[in-house]
Image (cartoon, rainbow, N blue to C red; front, top):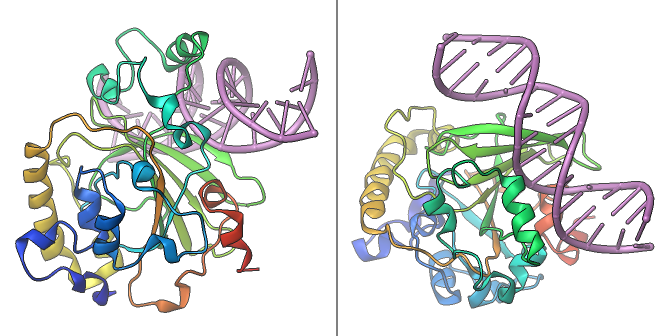
Length: 281
DNA sequence: CGGCTTTGACCGGCGC
DNA sequence: GCGCCGGTCAAAGCCG
């Protein structure tokens, strides 16, 4: 576990890109070079369809997560795969940001969806980032507060998938949590969207970092939080969400046995190319 | 009482 | 058109 954070060292400039967590903090649109530099891998090396620089898209910021990448994945979501779909006619990438929680006052998502659909628009989907985490608990603490709004049974899996939304006002970030049926010790968390607000001040442990990285926890996490909040102050500008991809990371904490072993037919099925999954069976 | 979870219903997308 | 499936809603219930 400790080795994970070892990339974060050296200069301040590098802090931004010395770990996945740092990258996640960044609201910059990542490109291949950044990612490769940050994660010390080339997306092209993976036996799956690489994410293009244009669809790498926006990554959410989770300063408490400390992760190593498995592979960047292209989401199978149709609308995010087609940049044309996202351009234009809606109020733009910051629509959610401006609208309040997720919709304007007096409008339900259903209503909005219907409006959009009436004009042949597709609902935009935000950038997604999936994490695989070895944990006994489903709800990993990432510094934000989440409200559960749904749960669905996952096909071919005894474990349900839970849907959470960030409880902060004007925050449209969602996450899905499910457990891998092949390895129940693995929790797969998929984040969608980006927080435009500070981490809740009421935040309290145990945090995912502490849970997973033991003694490494507090100091790093504290600095993460500080950095994160400073970052947020500086980055209130609109961010382009168009053509987002999904990136998958795995939390690693000294247990290399589960490295790249986790395959899930629920959530991951949605984002992991079948070719990539096959070599496991 | 407010915030949260649970859970069945509903909706839209998609494949056939 | 139909059925399946993923995602979301919202009422009811729970809990501190």
